[in-house]
Length: 185
Length: 176
Image 1 (cartoon, rainbow over the protein chains, first blue to last red):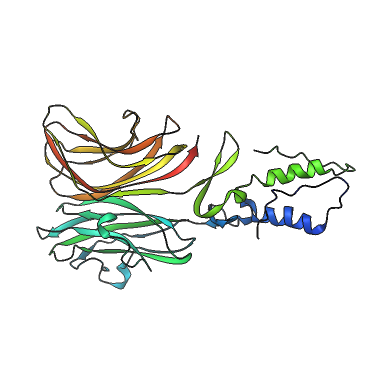
Image 2: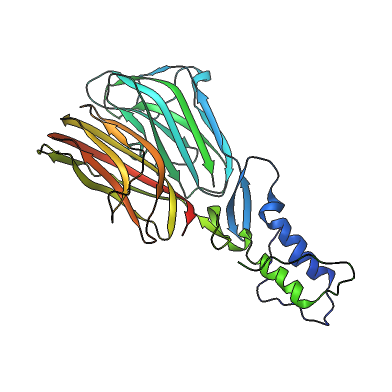
């Protein structure tokens, strides 16, 4: 329901109140507020635009199995069931992502193994170096990172975790216990 | 915050003054504050008014090598910095690529640039020669309204430490 600003409008004793005024200033405005927008327990509110609120829900996905990667970034693990984790959500143009995995570099002496989210439609705007969980270590670590994505077209977006070594290197690596959480804004 | 309007009573004459109180109260609702997309909504419990919380994220790619030849730990701000601008409590998320070539490595945390004893309780550590990029998170509470925070590194005695590709993101939970 659209919000109509009550600023600048004053009731005056003696003036009849019309149903249009009442419906616009009270009924419709209350329906545009947090209480009017709320539909499901456990969600939060964000702004969707000027005088507009949206109810949002955090999303998460998890893949427990370990996968081995010997390809360049960005790549999917072998086996369709191991692709991801992946989440799909609605937003107004921006979202926060947190991601974690257990990883190690198993071969190669140069280069890193990367684990980072790729939103559909992101293009080349986001460098893997600025947001990935990355390792050159031969022993397992559990590591996490985050990214604040902005500038997307409002609507529904899918984010998929991708894997791989730096371009031109020969490293291979293992990844397990792979997590992704997104807070849409 | 506008005065909470009282209840109406049966047979009470509806006055413009009372109806205008309801209008004033409506003007303080969160939806009236919304000025664009992409912001969380919080409530300032002191003023009982809503505030908008847009995440702020800063990234620094440049590699720094910190050398501590002394027998004591050494604190050094490595950035990036964020001005809190009236934010009192913020969720902080920090990531960095780190490695250590000598000594006991380093710890990384978020601290006030005006008082390095005001630090986030969570920190990131790496005392390995191999690079790892990862992060951690915590809650930072400012003790001044114009606070500015930065990544603060504690380099161990007789240690060399490298840091790069660091990102700091905040989400405001409480305003002054």
